[in-house]
Image 1: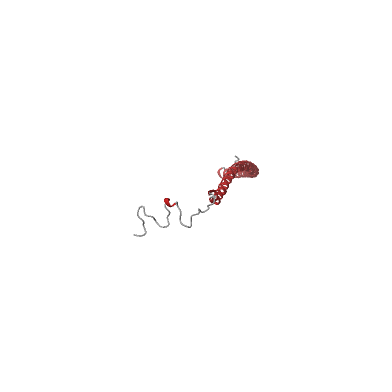
Image 2 (image 1 turned 135 degrees about the vertical axis):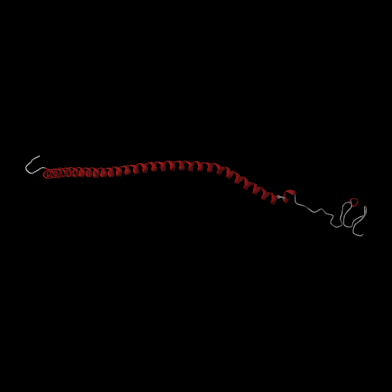
Length: 155
């Protein structure tokens, strides 16, 4: 095989150490920029990203205090709203109870008046019936006596 040299044979185009490492006309070293300039764009991107992440973390830490303050404020407002709602409920309940008591008293008064009127009417009817019954009993008694006793005898 012609392409692969044997050990100790010279490969065309590859300089040997004994030749001084020269490759024909390309004997000059290629000037390379310093290593720090190779990574500058990548380093800048990484530094920007790092600064952005640190800023976000700091913002999150700052937001934690702000969020805690907002949560405490919301809790205080909720507590005040609950107290106000309970006060309104108690006030409404008291007003409703007062209104119900007033309506109940009015209804009770009306019913008591009707009952008293009915009792008075019943008493009047009872008295009328009793007097009517007394007169009827007297009339019946006289009628029975007339039938039983002969004429001219008084009882």
